[in-house]
Amino acid sequence: MLRFLFIVALIQASSIEFQCPPTTRSIEYLLSKAYIPGASIVVLNRDEILYEKGFGYHSPSISESEERHPMSASSSIFVLASISKTFIAVAAMQMVELNLLNLDEDINKYLLPRISITHPFYPDDIITTRHLLTHTAGIGVNFEEELKFYLPGDDFTKTNLGDVLENYLSYNASWLPVRPGNHTTSYSNVGASLAAYIVERLANTSFEEYVQEKILRVLDIDRENGGYRLSNFQNKQQDLVGHYIYNASWLQTYQAMVPQLNVTRVNNDSNWLYVPFYSLSRYPAGYLRLSAHSLSLFFQSFMNKFPKLLNNVSSFEEIIRAEPQTSYMNMSSTKYGLLWYWKSIGGRYLIGHEGSVPGISTIMMSNEKRNLGIILLTNGDTVREDSQSDQVQTTIIDITNGLFDCFEKLPNTVGEELIKYYIAQSEAAMIFRAEAVMVFAHATALIFNGTAYTMNTIDQINVDNSDCHCVVICTFISSSGAYRCEILNREFMFSDQLATVISGLYGHDIAEHAHFYVDHKRVNRHSLLDEHQGKDVHVYYADHIHDPNRIGSFSVPVLEHHQVPRHHESGIIQ
Image (cartoon, rainbow, N blue to C red; front, top):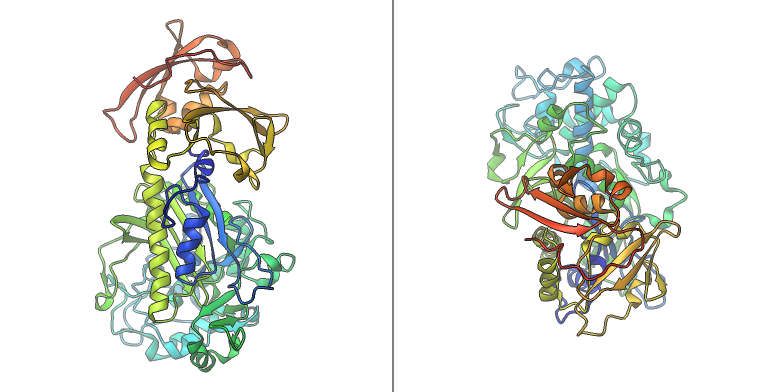
């Protein structure tokens, strides 16, 4: 239904703050104020991508002569940072469904004889996989040892995940004075990675290979488009988003803390630091690399309860269920399910995950009903504790809130209500009818007034005539993969794909319960085009999902392909 937003978004507005629908100018203005070189954004629901776009560049502007790589939501590949943890939860539940893992048994059942892990302060208390996945195992942050995890390039492949974790947990300083499983949460990268190592042990393959085969491949994401190794992308190195940090005063600090990363100043006159590509020896908790588009395939699967990745709905419910819990020293209001977490942002209760590593900050959140999700991947830095880092975090949250505000309030109505809404919201000179362009993004071109436009040139369409508050009906031309659009001056009609239109306008659930009548006889909506062309169809519907009190009907003609409609007053919600 929302495909025409890409057209409306092209209309110029007086403000360059966040606009609805978002514009390139408004988003890039917000990014530049926070010294974020670029971002990839995807807005999606359970059925489709509503908005997808890259903003800015892979790198900051250093000199006027340099050529920078523009950001693309489909091809720019980011380190996901801690969003990577959500894949661990899915892998663990796959082990549960195979009866290889019990979340509530001692983890040493799965670790022995390779390694054995106990809490040094509470050696008689068992640690379970559930404790690891809910951050309630009592594992703390040993900052000195954490810095050793950072490695240049793909050097994590030269380490053994079990050895790395066993060494970290051998220090008392790596543990909190908290009993495992007492519902006290303390966020732990090591705990999450230990859960991944258990999957590795049970699957008898490396965790990176497991994710590649059992999650990414199932979602049709191949090795050249997703993975933990830089070498996966050796043919797409230009698509890798680099790591830059704004604030050169941190140079000596970074060089002292992580000398192995060879952090440098871009040049003597620049305030930017450059961090060469690197990895982490505890890679499962933070170093999966994907584009925003590829990540949306995983996130949309989550919004639909992982139909291809999990066999049982109960497994999904286990992932999102947050038991009563208290944050260690009240440091966080976040409530954890199995690595996925619930968090209040902008007055909404959201579920998903955020992430941050030097030079990259990410967020992937769905609303509580899981019918609208936002992915925002940026090359802004929030690892440091200074005001500029805070500004990056604030900007990411502001954009996320703006996207939720924008796409949650878009109307689900048709006819005059929809048109009046967009005229009021954007003062658009042209309104594209949702019925006919709901799958617009899948077209290879748009033919308007005899001229073909691609998605890259669509901003050249002339919308200067502010008096033209008109309706544009677009008919799909299957032979050319394009839409042919005509101004119909407030005519109201449906395209010849009426059954699909109903689903696009009201959602699949509502369409499933709608009743269709032709000549006073109820008919199957799928037979409309085959048997009832040229006749009027009367549609009766009830919105069981959004508003049980919303019951209505409308009447429209079933048109033959490319038939030009005569003036028809029905088709407006009664």
